[in-house]
Image 1: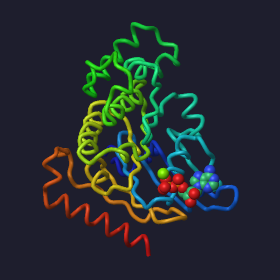
Image 2 (image 1 turned 135 degrees about the vertical axis):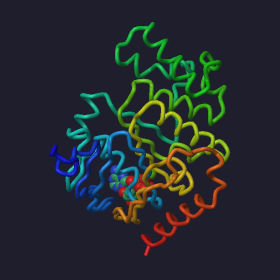
Image 3 (image 1 turned 180 degrees about the vertical axis):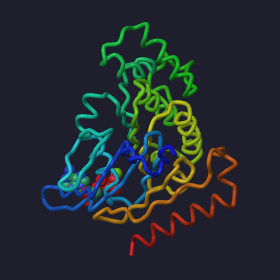
Image 4 (image 1 turned 45 degrees about the horizontal axis):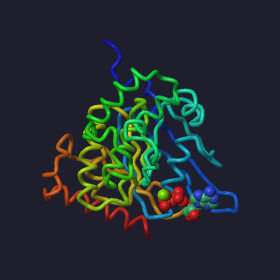
Length: 264
Ligand SMILES: Nc1ncnc2c1ncn2[C@@H]1O[C@H](COP(=O)(O)OP(=O)(O)O)[C@@H](O)[C@H]1O
Ligand SMILES: [Mg+2]
């Protein structure tokens, strides 16, 4: 009999946190005993109240700060090393942080330029991304000529232009109106399906988490701990119609209850 998959050693997760703790200088304990595995290609949403350490957890995964306890690896490396050596991580923040004097195309292409890629190779990849986010005809405009939602699309395109393995998103759509947020949720889901990156998405919006993710991780108030994880039961039906389904409302209700529970 060949070895069954069950007897093979489990492959380490792409992002692996073990008993992670973070106490800031001055004594604020932001995270306590956080254990989390994110498989390659997964889409994980982190939800939790403001101040529970969501951004801190993303900054730890990015290697921008070092944990004060526990272990954390990205692709088997220390996060800082993974970010610097593999160039395999990208961020999207709530503020798109585009360079106002650059065109949309030149903003999207900036990571490739910094990477030393030639104009022709850049051009092709930039056009591909602009097509993906529906902004091809805005390539030569400047950020101030765009709406908030369009600027966020540019920010997404710029994050994905270098084909990152891991995309870290910190409340990226928090400043947008509800309709625009929903559109961008649909778009991000499509990008994820076509580009094959792993996503770690922070939000305090339960509906957004349920619409986007394969797994919703609920965090407790400070010090942030993982209260529970819920597998999202809507496989590939992430279309606008999903939001109107009773099962969707029921799942969002379950996540909300877990958030409330964690608050006690
Ligand atoms: N650099 C820092 N120094 C001290 N305290 C910090 C620092 N960064 C975050 N904190 C504190 O850690 C806690 C978690 O912050 P944060 O990760 O930003 O939460 P969230 O993103 O969930 O709103 C907060 O109480 C915040 O004030
Ligand atoms: Mg935050």
